[in-house]
Length: 500
Image (tube, rainbow, N blue to C red; front, side):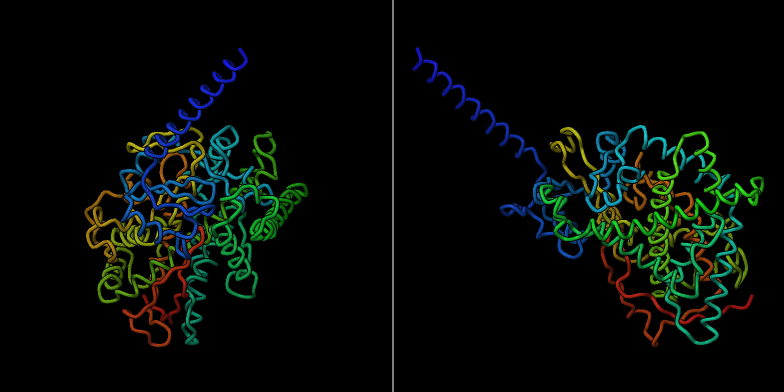
């Protein structure tokens, strides 16, 4: 009898192992194609210094839905508009959660961040606050004069540099302007003296370091067992960066609360974001620590991304001074007048300027690999099985350069959008610099005001010559990779004020 039972158990065990192996092979066969992984590290070595480019090249071999093994994490890379639409629209809910990078867990930020929280009650509260109290048309219109003052300061500073023959670092001044455009929208004041001293530069370096650390391939994300060791020190450095920002924002909040306590704040005239959030604090819809993490999200998403887009746009325009620049100046001259500052109300009338912004977003998306998503259950996608807990990356950079979607995809041609209905709102999956679906960047309404105003003003108010007499065609256009895509070599040019 005992021999019979032992034999039966052995048969059942063998049969179970057979089923497990068959199911495993079946699952592997349903995975999207991809390069063969090495032992332990998988395909990490394939990422290189420019993962957006490396993954785009691999997609040429393995297809627009591709799988890689990054350590212990199965990663699915989406490189076509059709597959992106499946992920971001048709199956948006299944793909709506985030893979929380270890870097953004510093200071417990991922537990309070609208960008990184899973879809749930707290995420919905934060999204509602952003869509109802921060980025509505009425709220943005109410404080547009604050942003207009910052653009006037930009013109004054660039003119001052031009009169002394000093080249302007366009990315730096665009960042400083973006920083104070945003800080005036949120706090009704400058965070830093925009063009003097070192504080603005320190803030820019701080923001880039955050983007760099968050975008650096992190062994902890690929091998979670290493979390307690933080072998690359990424979380440790991010704790320092996040801590500085959270301390800054907490000071701004405390200052406003003290003004209100002393009766020095005019509640009737103030329309900034901080006042709106403090009203929500009073009714316990949000607390101050959570609001500070919300500010961190807003500044991380709204400064470096905006300034890098402005810098890329100006670099592309100056490279084609006889065509793109000349046409942009002609439109601006005709619509608002030579040498005048572009106002937010002018944007709807400046068709070619809007095309320049779209074309810049196509070739140089601010976030080339949209923030990583994660599936909580097995999902069917384009005939493949995406396994539970897989990371999903959408390569917006590759989609923007897809030759099946775009004619001459590597050429900067704003004209391609002149008769096109394609927009930046995530409705057209060949152009998704802000993402799409429920995870679309909530700051889009502010970004599409800030970028064309700055680009249009720099074009209309100044004539430009590249520093050192560099010919337009020789301008270096290499990028450097973080979560955001920055220009490797800063764009520097000498400005001459255009007299209206």
